[in-house]
Image 1 (cartoon, rainbow, N blue to C red):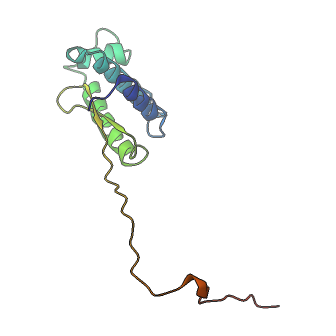
Image 2 (cartoon, helix red, strand yellow):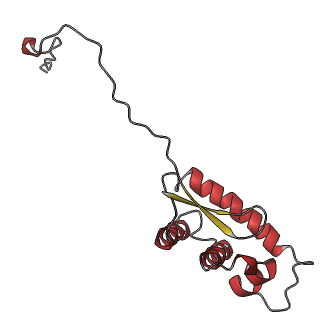
Image 3 (tube, one colour):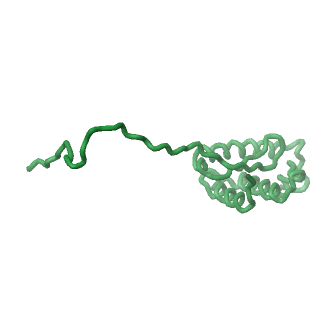
Length: 141
């Protein structure tokens, strides 16, 4: 089953509005950039340099070989997404993750393991016409 773009954008919006991401400006920009580039089919374009310059607004002289900013923020983003999906996002229909090798986003349908099983009452010999077997009478003061 494929995931449509509008569902991914809705999930991205849920994540960015969540309490986990609300005050994390850099991680919000990082996630937004990689999701939008992934949806646009620009996975090869999602490099440390592109994320820093285009996604986070760093200067064009950014050097990913000497500046570990993107690697550090990617680790933080992965951890924060895990925390989000363990709490606020646990029932979200789609999961957005940051790839381990590379920086593109991956989208998967979440499968809830909740299965409704009706409980069968044991056969008991009681009659509804007998009324309750316990009567509570309020005490007078």
